[in-house]
Length: 356
Ligand SMILES: *Cc1c(COP(=O)(O)O)cnc(C)c1O
Image 1 (cartoon, rainbow, N blue to C red):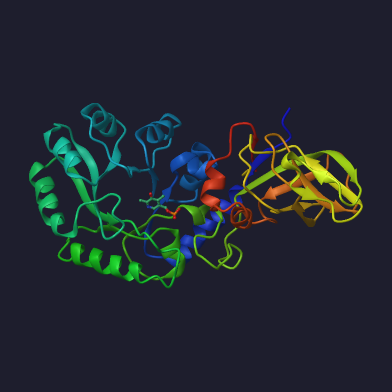
Image 2: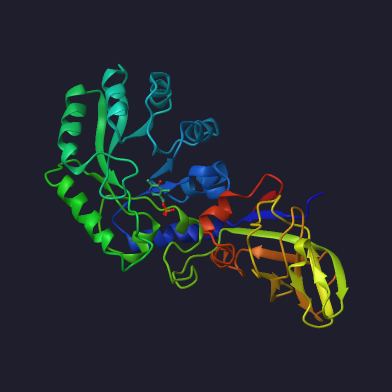
């Protein structure tokens, strides 16, 4: 049996949703649960968020929305990446999903498709150049959709490229472009802010915010920790010590013999590795054991990793936190040259899931 375990703390999730409300008291919350709620488990997270008063959920793909509806989730769900195929639009209508329209092919498909749809968000490209209509196309898209009829409401949204860096001038530029496109927009529904903007500019108002990462308790802002932002880790990834090795100064550890003991001492071998989704690229990442912090020694293997415990007391079966309330996932991500977003999403099915 694998010793690795993913525990999900619903009270931390509710706390982080409350942080969104504190930052944007007047906004409605479209909580992002794409990619299995950033690896936390979409259905379980959606249930907690629904009970805690989230106004809507956001996913990238149709099958993600289908999974939530199959599980009995009745909140509004928005499909962020849009769709073209008519059969898919039929499903959107059957499941009362909201649709994001971001390109002409999709607009044409929607104009030709005969069904009714509750809400359509028009996505504008304000500078990220990934998805969205140009600012000067928005008026035409809007009137095409209005003429079509059969659409309950229209909304306007955009996505920010560099909001993680408070100093980046591109964010203001994107906000100005959005304001220009939304000028004269009588409809109520507008949405710009991701987690980074919600935290960096509390009080900035659009009618909807779209938090993702901050709900899960990691920091979306460069140079600021989740603790400084008063976020609480929702996921705790843990495993157990499966062996303890005595080392002489100079002994080398693991594949490639990349770590050499600086002194006599011990290392603890922990039963988790990249087969569970712990990043192989992590170097000297922190872990917590018996309330103390230690660092990885050498390379991460598929099923295990080693930590340098010096001469401290360690026993077989001791629990080790890889990330969670004690070790910020952001810190591990930095040691692995990536972001906590990726660490969460890359966990495999091997780790046992557990909800608190
Ligand atoms: C994923 C996503 C978000 C949430 O971003 P975070 O940085 O996790 O807050 C918001 N909007 C869109 C369009 C997204 O795809």
